[in-house]
Image (cartoon, rainbow, N blue to C red; front, side, top):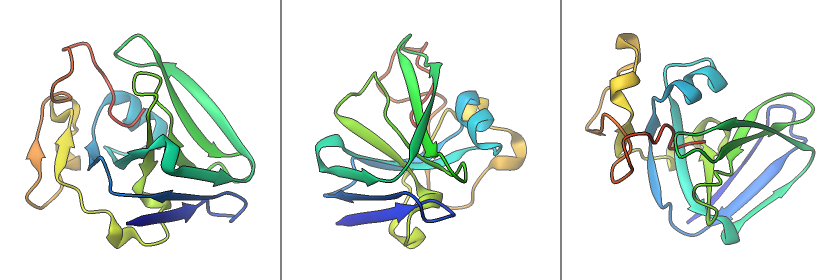
Length: 144
């Protein structure tokens, strides 16, 4: 599988090769605030299979792990593109709205549903998790 995408103004392009490590919608408060939505559709890919070209800027916040959650966006138009979470240095999280082919995103899970606003519930057969499966209770973000 190849995932390609980029920003609104087309100044930034990325490409990831290989299967997604996961695909879901993160409803943690960090993702809500970063995106201005009730949840971020996100898929994880291997960092060593990810390439990006163009002017990217970063914003950092402290994730639930205590490590920085890093979000990458276009320096020109501000489109939110991908995350490089320090808690999982082998992974990049791609924000599905930035994919060239949004149909290539096939979510299977909804994360942090305990923090999801009532108006943000998606239709479909997603496994719901009140927090991140397998993570300590303090963990706050899948997409960060």
